[in-house]
Structures are given as structure tokens and as C-alpha cells.
Image (tube, rainbow, N blue to C red; front, side, top):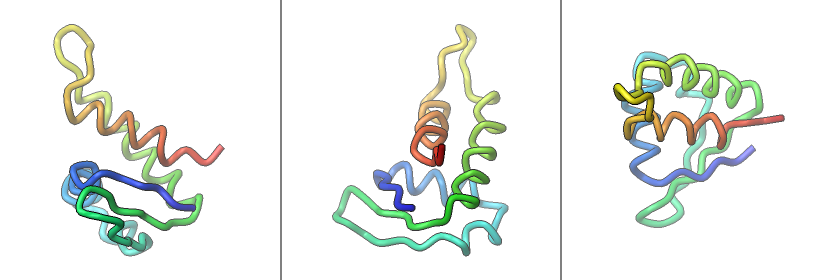
Length: 85
């Protein structure tokens, strides 16, 4: 499958969410589309793993009014974009 991310989202994925998961990161193939977007090619099992990581991390990124922070919004976006159903 293919997932298109903005550069900011891609940076968060690689530098934060997958920072300590080199094994999973190596299963992704990246293609620069333009200065604002990157396509990620991966299989559905890997997409499910990324969704699970994003879901686990999401609970830590809400403010006092239970509104997602900027990181929380990116994680919610990952949960939707990496959905395989």
C-alpha cells in the first residue's frame, strides 16, 4: 500500500514514532514527491503495526481539556492514513 505524508508528518514518523523501532523503519520504502510530500510504500502488516504504535502513543498527547495537541493530531492522522480495513 501507499501512504502520502507531508514532510512534517514524515519527520515525526521517522524521528519520534519509529525512532526506537529500526526493524519496522527498514520495512518502509520512501519516495519524495515534491518539497512538501513523501510517499511511503509498505505492506498491510507494517501499516497495522504503525497504527498500533500511534494509538498507544496518542493517549499521551491531549491537553487538560482532552483536546489533542499538535503531536496528538499527527498521531490521529497516522491512525487514519495507515488504516488497512
